[in-house]
Image (cartoon, rainbow, N blue to C red; front, top):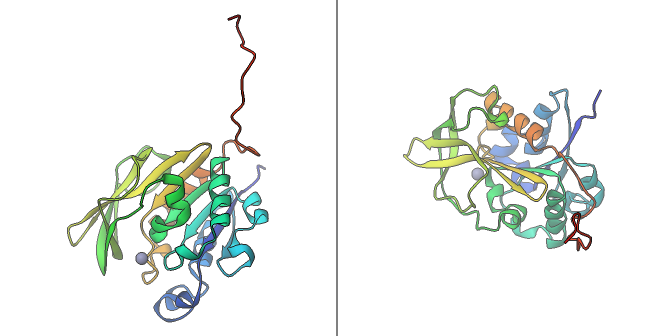
Length: 243
Ligand code: ZN
């Protein structure tokens, strides 16, 4: 049996998620809800880490054993220490996969890897969204309906401040009239990156079977094909043919 894909679901998980509406929906936190459905897949072994863990949950030990990092953050992006952000970016360049969920579009690793603002416009009205596949043959869309509805989600709108993606897997239409590229892939050096929009903390959308299917597929797509200790830039002094 081949080794399971090792996933770490990272979440801020501070006071604002431990009380009120979010805690009522996700009593063990968003990170545990996400890890729980990932762990139902026989090919995946998912653990969690949070901002209040040592080294903000981003220790070398955790990152070294992680094949795919799943990132959920919203209010505390600015508090993540740059040294740890650098670690994450370095690991992705050396082959670790990363999945940015929902408001992670403003996180330091997202902006650092993509080199753009990550900005978008948003509206917190819990409106209906229809998510359409735009790349039905992509493995991240496998087994997902051509379109599906989420009854209540925060609205995110174009323009989305990202570079041209490798693939646009999903676009979303919101009841208020906005549209958004809601499922995008990128590559940076050896690492694969997926962004997926659903997952506002006051809606139970990580219990939606289609959302779960997309994130599970994305973990399998983003797993490292090749992982190296360092990226080198060697002087290739000896030509293979006579010059
Ligand atoms: Zn949100």
